[in-house]
Length: 321
Image (cartoon, rainbow, N blue to C red):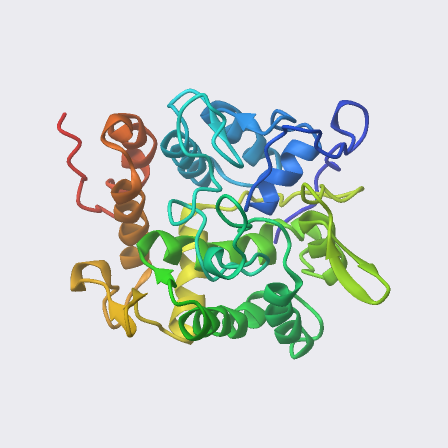
């Protein structure tokens, strides 16, 4: 059983502050909240080392924290990364569409469906998108646990394929589509273990106005009196969660091209009866396939000690070393 430990501070230097003009916020509600509570830089420009420290603070294990640091390396310049738009210091930032941010988000609009000038709004709260998951939660006692996301994961995929003529669901989108519910269901509830609407609303930044759900600009915050998981959440646990979600309603990877949905090549598809090892190696390969050549060695330093050793033995990605 997980045992409670100390409440995470949300006062003093870690009091909530809404982001100011020019501060970066993006598609990940966890990173937005960490910035709003000062566990990463409040301007939204962070570093791999800071991501590791902050992630461990909210109950994420060393191995998952290292994966998040690798994503920061890929999205940034190797030293810093933006949790939102490109910072001008190098790198795309996490808002870059179909880089890490992708279609089928649970809380935000598909890029094609919410155009702005320039670009699109693919990171603010979108009630139409969230309603799919909210309605699924009403079938599961109002809770935002895995049973809810087994329903809404498939529905958000179907909505993208049906309504978004540029819907893309490749390996990177797979990771975030099935990994995000694990954050909502396990990390956000913390040691209390109850994925209530109140908890999700606080982290994401959702409130009610006139009976309608609205999103707080800049995202949410860490709940007051919140206790992280006593047993930090690990990569194998994440893989088990992703496997559970995916196998409930398996879908094909591909994209809407021209007149219809075109399947990705077979090497980018999961096997018909995947196991945890398959999921882990798929994550490893997908992250490397997103990495610019210049970042491969740095990414390998974070990922290889997790994925290429016993008991997983994922094929080592060639970095030209």
